Length: 415
Picture 1 (cartoon, rainbow, N blue to C red):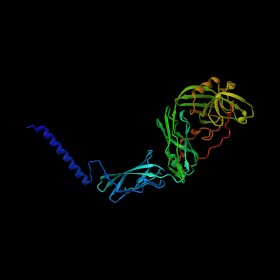
Picture 2: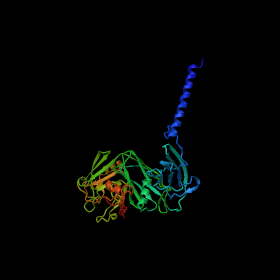
Picture 3: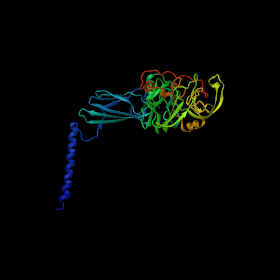
Picture 4: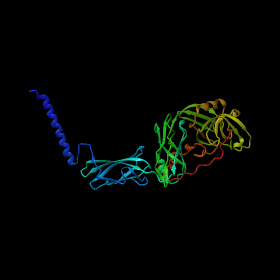
């Protein structure tokens, strides 16, 4: 009787399998399948796009998916070969889905549709199609800035457009496709400086030692009438320590912070009356070292022509932080410069070695105007977050952004 234990076990297993199989069949016929395998919904839905590669879909037209009377659409996912998803809207009854974001031209799309039949059983269908090339050759390319590298926590990201974009709806398409990601993460927004330039900054300064990735998803996307998105090279930036130098013009003193801790206090002199240093936050533009500064560059009545060392530029029009050995007797006591922030040679060398492009130089309690947000360097941080967000086509809505002030003087301004 060798058949006992093993054969009994086998027979039991066979009976179990049959039992489960019968259960699945019964549930399937009743509309409550235990299996997750969906049925083929090809006969239940229709597309307004031909499948395959021979016939191209017009990217100007929205994508539509429609269900027949025997079922309803529960979900649609449309994505191109570059990983760009198409936003869409599903009707309340599940009868129709249509795209709400534009398709890219000359792209391959995969559309996955989930359905339910009258009994609630799930169905699936997948469609692939290709869009044609745009009829027009007019395209919008994007150039990101600054150059890839390491910067201070105040450095804005810039996007220069090859073609002006004025229409608000077109601006929203452009802005939605310009992606900025940081690690650690930081809330931020684009701001339209003018029709061809955008700046991006976080709500607060970038995190210290962060990595920032910038890219465009505009390639092949329709932006407006006869205007299509072009290419853009991605950009990668990193930040260093948080360096902020705050100059109190009334106290004639600069306090330098590293990661929110005071690391040095420096006696300084700033602009005398009539040449007052601008108030506000300025982002370091460059470390220029030795610079020749003349009175002619600003039309000063008193003549000077000086070679200045350890010069750090903070405005396009020529405001610097630099060594000023001729005014050491006034540093910490009086403001005697033509607009720059001057300090002793030793302190200027320390500052030059400590500060980097993208770091923050802030001036308070000066008689000067506040630095303009745009047009004279990076004064972006002089807009509060509400006003900064108002310059976004996505966040701010309808507020128009004034054109930046033009500055003619690009030479060193003052000492």
